[in-house]
Each structure stands twice: as C-alpha cells, then as structure tokens.
Length: 84
Image 1 (tube, helix red, strand yellow):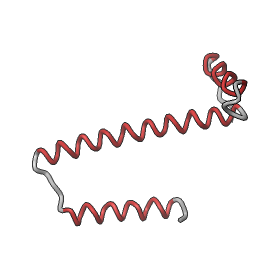
Image 2 (cartoon, rainbow, N blue to C red):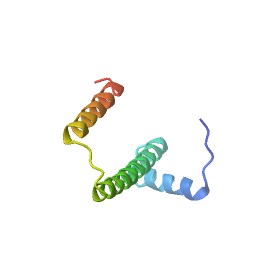
Image 3 (cartoon, rainbow, N blue to C red):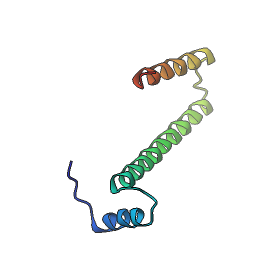
C-alpha cells in the first residue's frame, strides 16, 4: 500500500526513527495508528457509559443476570474472533 503523507507527518516519523524511539518508519506509523484506534475506542466507550448512566437515571434498567449474560456472550465472541 502506498499512502502519501503530508510533510509534517513524514518529518515526525523521521524524527522518531532518528531519535531511536522506533526501529523503522512502519513501526512509528503502526504505533501512531494503534494509539488513535485506542483513543477512538475510549471515546466510544465513554459515550456508551454516558448513555447508560442517562438510561439508569430514567429508570431504564435491565436485570443484572441479563446484563451479565450479555457480557459473557460478548467475551466469548471476542475470544472466538481472536482464536482463543
């Protein structure tokens, strides 16, 4: 894949590699992408938490055993996707 990057990003990548923070350009790019994905996931979870709190404040609560089962099912799905 060939992705053209703006000069400021190329400069940042080169600085990171030259400073020894990363062994290669691809390692710096992958780390930056991983950080962005994690940041987005945290933001998404915060939004879901806010909505859950709002639902609880409105009295829209699910029974604990139902919530627990959904969490268990989700964990099982994630584990299956990762091949564990």
